[in-house]
Amino acid sequence: MDDLTVLMPVRIESIIRLENLLAVIRYLTDNFNVRIAVLEASQHNNKILQRLIPEEVRYTFVKDTDPVFYRTKYINSLTLSADTPYIAVWDADVVFPPQQINQSVELLRTGEYDVIFPYDGMFWDTSKDIRQMFIETGDIEMLTELKEMMSSLYGPGMKGGAFIVNRGKYINAGMENLRFYGWGPEDWERYERWKNIGLRMKTIKGNLYHLSHPRDMNGTHNSEQQRIISFYEKDMTAFSSAEEIRKRMK
Image 1 (cartoon, rainbow, N blue to C red):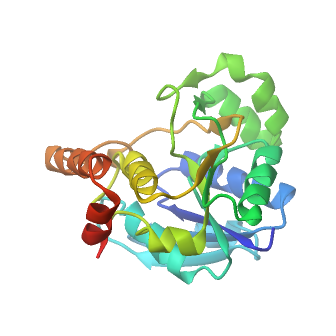
Image 2: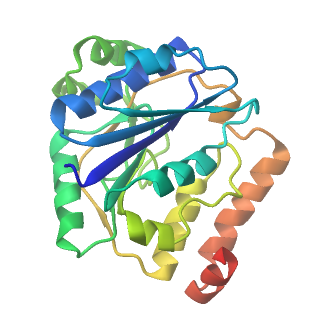
């Protein structure tokens, strides 16, 4: 899969987040020949992550003293620096069975689709005990076997966690909406925007497994103002025409 780059912006605010990210990178490098680009944005570069990730992973550090993790901005930065025809925007805490990724990339290569969601919309949270088992073993088949012991974080129909996309089409569709500053419903705004401007999307049957972690201010709306703005952006996009969306993008 040397025509795909996995983009992973991250802020390491806990040992659990660090363990999750390393486990996800290990899953990717064990199962695929794929490029990985990690961007760490933090107040101080302690070089811990840089020393722990494999040498083949492209690592970038950005000094950022803002307590709010501006994820959309960093996704756009990683997208523009990628040089492969396809990219995957990937959370630091999610994994999928490998066959779902293979199927996703194969479908993109046919040219029949612009965007692939590599799971069927159920966002399974592992729980801390099952997460620990995966951290220790890297056994994704174990996650499938224990799925009935997990909970669904958000219910069916989710579009977050990861998506795989034709890079050129993604850029032309506006990439990430920078009005989403911190945690919010940007996954839904993005999906509605793509749908309204006519991108060809496909959902793959199968599971997403989310490695449990504690939540700080970047795991929820960081202010009431930010919550209002983010839902306004989502709703505005949902009820806009393709022409209106492209005008705003300009």
